[in-house]
Image (cartoon, rainbow, N blue to C red):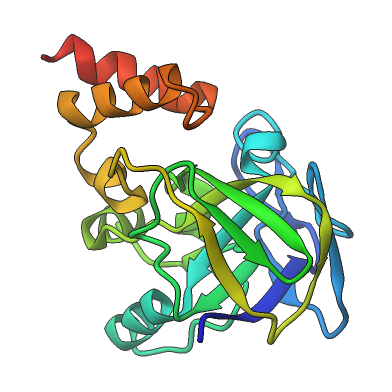
Length: 212
């Protein structure tokens, strides 16, 4: 059964040498239920709101199975929240999630919007030189979600995929390949009313089609 391993919110803001000067990537599991609203989890925050957060990146999920891969590779534990994720999942496809599919998670309904793009803050958080490239190479970026229905979530809640568009473009596929065929499939699905693409995805679609 697919379930939530942990629900994570910001523990503390940390200093960072990037342009903002601070980061909210330090997420830790909550022992209590957390309300997910339109802009994300109650008691959570994003420091750099130019590139993080907003309605289309309200929630970030990462799979326990992929965290275990990196734990083996790095020879250290990757506890929930290490990657700045809000939801650590088990038993559900995150990399294989189709853009626009919807999950029922506890009392909330979430919609997959895009893969996470690794940044310098993430590399500094991990303390591993070349981390962004290693993360990209594995091809499991985790998924961002918008909130379709607000609700409470907690560790142990079930996860159910309740709707899946048929365009076939997955989080992992779009993250690694962004080819013209996938770009056109996303545009066609949006034109048919099956999905609603976020602005960042539209920008990458434009770049992919320009290469065709």
